[in-house]
Length: 137
Image 1 (cartoon, helix red, strand yellow):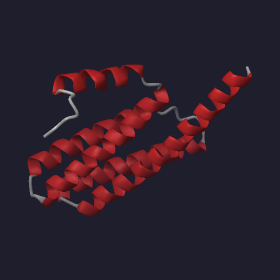
Image 2 (image 1 turned 120 degrees about the horizontal axis):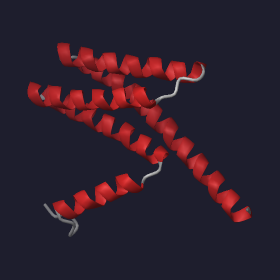
Image 3 (image 1 turned 180 degrees about the horizontal axis):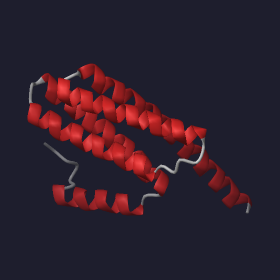
Image 4 (image 1 turned 45 degrees about the horizontal axis):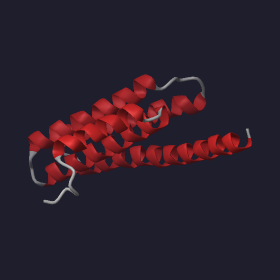
């Protein structure tokens, strides 16, 4: 497989640098994308009846959701609702893992996808505002 001339070690250093230089908003986006990646890998493993890989990837997705829950400052009704949705997604992953339930995986993926897509828009709006104030300021 051709990797564009970028070796595995170089790619790892690049990813580490991208992670270290990311803004808090970009880090949150990385968490959402990582969670979705692990849910997708879990679904593939479930289809192949590779229960070890399914469990491994669901556990990684759960750790990300737990991290999102811990870092969320519950200050108002909106953040309280976010916490409840994270909790629901986490529980869906537990059900998926225990019962090999692909629908529960899809429930979790749907919630996290919605958060990710909303977060992308927040980042876009924030960038526009920062660049606009930088030009005018």
